[in-house]
Structure formats: structure tokens, C-alpha cells
Image (tube, rainbow, N blue to C red; front, side, top):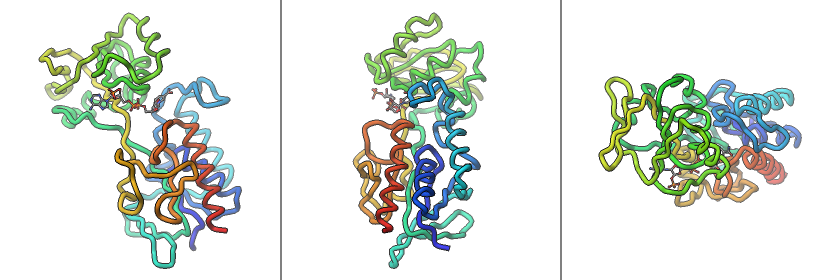
Length: 295
Ligand code: NAP
């Protein structure tokens, strides 16, 4: 069978694309690497800016999206795509890690982004032994302990609001994230801001014991949450489509890329605001653009 559209990724962008594709009567398949995954949103704590669902947890929001797709009988396939190829016929062939293949007339690539690493000594060594990229997932391991949150964006600030007993270490004086969260953190007794400093090394003995700053100061902590934003997952498409200098796939809100028939949606594409609401919107737009392309 040749599907009308293969949707790669089952985060908010991919699931929204799937629902719009089904409603446009397209044969669609959602390919996901992780069993019943819902993307990065599952790792967000409280989401207060998704319209109509104030205060919902990221995990629950992701599950709600998924239930919606299941209700609409979206077809899912748990596979890791290793190659996307456009054939002479104009169709796309997706090869999976077990060497099986499927074919489709179009692709919506919604593979999202992954956490940016700090690239400092000790980081790789202590992943899972004190270094984490997800406060919601791992925060509970540090109850009653001291941790450091690195970064100054919304992720770092939200992580800091979620954790207790911590240092927020940021390279600049100003935060990139929401002022309202900064104000709330300032009111907390157990939060220390270490501004205009960079962590040069994560120190430890089998487990993390501290962070060393560039001026030689060592701060004793049991855990380090790196919140340096994310990098787009473009390995599968980087040789097929045009990217911007930061590595995002060049596309407007229709998701149309430089390769006809290949669309992108969500955090992988060039845009100003990477949020659940814009990912959902991207999925809807890309599926609509695919339907028009197939006509
Ligand atoms: P981000 O906004 O890109 O922030 C990354 C932070 O890490 C910045 O403060 C940056 O410093 C710092 N950083 C990056 N590389 C560094 C390095 N090598 N050394 C030291 N510091 C480094 O990423 P984000 O916080 O994950 O947010 C991404 C998007 O999602 C944003 O649009 C954000 O608003 C949104 N978001 C929203 C919510 C919410 O609304 N609740 C929650 C999470 C994320 P500089 O500031 O100096 O560049």
C-alpha cells in the first residue's frame, strides 16, 4: 500500500497533522520511535498557556492529544526511520531500522527537537548519575538535596520553579524566560541566583558532587539540570531540504520545504515561537497543504 502521507513523529505537531489528514480523507500513518510517545510535551510540568486547558500537566495534555488521534482511528507504527528517499516516481520511501520499508506520496516530518548539551567536562560522564535534562522526570530524586539549574530561558525557570533547594546559574544578567516566573523565584527562600557565570565543569565521584564555575568557585550540588534549550532533529532530512544557519528546516506555516512533497511541522521548522499551540497549528496547516498538493 502507498499511503497518501507518512507523518514522522507523534508529538502535538504530528498528531494534529494526523487528525487533519484523516478528516481530509487521506490515508495516513504516524511513525513513532517511542511506544505511544507524545513528544517533548510529556516532560513539561504545568502548562498554563494552552488555550482552554489552564494548569494541565504536559503529560496529560500529550495523552489527551493521543486519545483524540486514537478516537479518529489514526494508524500508528512503532519504528525508527533510518532513511527517507524520494524516488523518481515522486513517491517517498521510508526505511526503518529493521530494514523494512513503507511508501507514501508525501511526508510530514514532525520529529521535534532534543535537549542542547552543555558540552563541558563531566556532563557525559554523569548523565543519569546526577546530570539530567528533564526536571519533571528526575526532580523527585533530589528531594531534600541541592541542585543546580543551568540556563536562563523558560525551561530553566520552570525547572527552577518545580525544584527545591537550588542554584540557578545563568551566563547573563538578564533572563530570556518569563519575568513573572523570575519574580516568583525571587520570592522563594531556597533559590540562589548565580548570574553572569558559566559552569565550566561538572565534578563528581561516581555521582555528581558539584559544579565548577569559570572563576574557580565550586558549588556543591547533588544534581545538575541542563536547560540550554533544544536542537532540531533534522538528521534524516538535512541532505534533502534547505536548513537555516541554526539547523532548522526552512519552511513557512504551510510546512512546505524546498523538496516538493516533503513538509515539516512543529519545532523542526524555522519560526519564532516554539510552543505546543504553534506545533498543533503547524500540523493542521501541513496536512491541509498536503491535501492540496495531492489534488
Ligand atoms: P531557550 O529560550 O533557547 O533558552 C536557553 C537558555 O540556555 C538561554 O538562557 C541561553 O543563554 C542558555 N544557554 C544555551 N546554551 C548555553 C551555553 N552553552 N552556555 C550557557 N548558557 C547557555 O530555550 P528554552 O528555555 O528551552 O525555551 C525554548 C522555547 O520554548 C522558548 O520559546 C520558550 O519560551 C518556550 N518554553 C515555554 C515554556 C512555558 O511557556 N511555560 C516552558 C518551556 C519553554 P542566553 O539567554 O544567554 O542565550
